[in-house]
Image 1: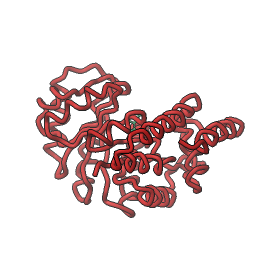
Image 2: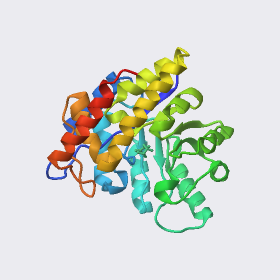
Image 3: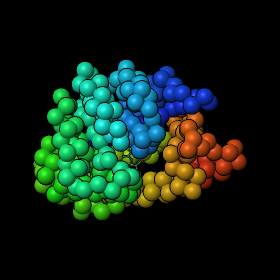
Length: 283
Ligand SMILES: O=C(O)C(=O)C[C@H](O)[C@H](O)CO
């Protein structure tokens, strides 16, 4: 069966500290709603904005509930990357993952060396988190071949043909965009969806429609997902998720941490009204 992976958001309290109990409540609900794997410290989890200790804490809170975990270890500090890999080595997880070194303009062979170092240190399979739009680097199938030790990939990429090509390596392949979930759940090993934090049941239902061959219903549901996901953009996708989890899943996951700013009350009300209108429409 194809997999639904959620890059879990990071619940913060008003002081900007991670609230471990809220992490666990959230993970339990996601698993109940059909999510298969939790991607820790991804984009939605503001991985690049977490300290090394916070990244480790998030892993341990999630592991208190499940070991169906992919642990993102990427950082611009190689010492930190390797400390996180070693931390994961002592724990039972599916894989570690990393985005390529971002921000700096570096030659491709530095990217190869970066991933080879991670593979060398890791007891777990190493997955590539390819997100050219955010990192400025495209670790495509040819570069992944050159790295030689990539065992899975999450490609956050609107170019689905680009994602499919990783299957030439015979590795676990996922696309990380909500609006390609129908394709990812039909052709790839699964989908990675930030919006799965607040509407996991829609992605489970999408997978059921695909499995039943009911592609008309699957397409209508994909369009509904697109509309809801698109509604969050002007408010800040990641910040919006904290309020939508509370509204649609019924429990508190804390607040976002700047620079993912909390929303003003009137914006929260506006967002929820817009999403509720779409949510309540039948497909
Ligand atoms: O949040 C992540 O780590 C994801 O993989 C989901 C998407 O790729 C990311 O949020 C960009 O929308």
